[in-house]
Image (tube, rainbow, N blue to C red; front, top):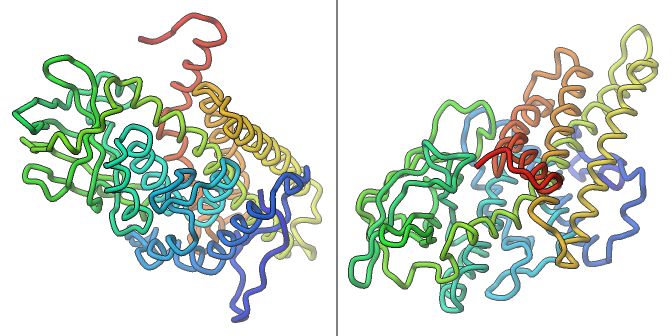
Length: 406
């Protein structure tokens, strides 16, 4: 939802192709409160001046941008809509705008933020005790404590309900054994929310695991072609001892796990919008500035047609996001609505970015022009927190009353 003209760089440095242009074609800005606008603009400036200049180098090197990450707490956004315990208590629209803007700059940064604020912290806030919230959340909001969310396993992705990691009671402790895979922040986290099956009851519980505990081992998954500057990990849990005081009391079944995921799935729709906005901005600016056959590419009819179609899809994505934010504000957003928004927006973003890449010609594959990075990163968003296929089947089950999967 890029709203206004680019923010001038006082240093006079060359602009980035993906700096924000005007894409508020349906005047969604009119819905913003002054506080929402201030949050939006603060993150926008941060993205244009801090994130974009560093993003491509970090992506190319597959290194996390700690210099940039450590500047997030002063923005007052870490913790999203969690209220109290040092968290900002943002409204749903502000949360979405933050996610969108971070993704417009760097999908890896947006993913790091989503794991920290939207999965790890949200699990503790929703399912933890008052004591656990007070103990963990303030440090996480300051990024003194990095969090991770350990659900997916080597053999269980879309069917995560069948997870095999076990939790066995031993006096006042629990013993965790198993493996997790694709765990964002898992190798750098101080605390990982690990989901494991009680060997006695068969129920799924959540545990806030200290990653320095003997038996917890995490290794970065190498050679990724997407989200290269945020690290996902393979985690081994070999007799990891966790005190009862670190078990989340509100996590009694897998339905509780699903409650956390339902709150974050809509965020994926906003993140996809951010990636798509970056692609559209880059394509528009490039075609206005690139001269071929004696005139700007944007003067060609076929280029204008493609830009308009991109804008049409982009504005549709915006309206999806605005509506799910409104529903969340009312407490009426369901997992299927969030899933439909995620499915739609990631699919549209993939198409917009492929068009942008093509409109930039050979220059479209250069990281310095950002589009190729976003085109690769949207593949991760399209997959995590439920693939397009799974989201389709979940919504299909609701509208037909028939389940096509177990």
